[in-house]
Image (cartoon, rainbow, N blue to C red):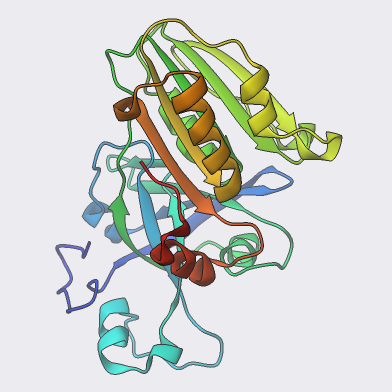
Length: 273
């Protein structure tokens, strides 16, 4: 979605140009980047708690025209020079403060976005497109179940903050270990089950072993594709969850970067509902 202050081109528009204000290491594998600048005003608040944006990273060794315009690059430069795109959840968007927050999963120098986040300094530029999204907690649900891993944790945290006061919320989050746990703020009656990989635990087993809340349950399930597929079957067939109350998607697939993962999804191997 192009900023209203920048002209769109045929393929995605120029993008929103934001700058790094500050960063914070939340856990050993999660870095928070606070973005600001005039470009924040052009980012629409679509009301979803799983809203996501496409981040554009310059390819090393490629000279891009300035100002960096994603749409223009796609129109005028060969595909091999197009920016590397990565999808991230918007943790929060505050137009009054002029700030957008994105939490990055990091694993040292592995990947593209994680190393960028680790090295980010105030004043660095980040161009993004979006947001998209599809889920937010329904006010008339009797209870909420939220399931994911580090990649889904920003969306789960945002959703926890949005539930109706007193509503039961059961969150299941898989992380490497205890140091990767975060405090989740929630006006509802929140129960969190952390599954630690280093202890041989996984989120699928945690959900299967858990008691199920009563009443009409809305569920959010995002994470690694093979786990999401197993959970979809479990929730619909064994828990009797209403299909229209299930938001489910594989964020990533083990062993694939985003380009390969998106190609795999286009081939019909993704999970969505």
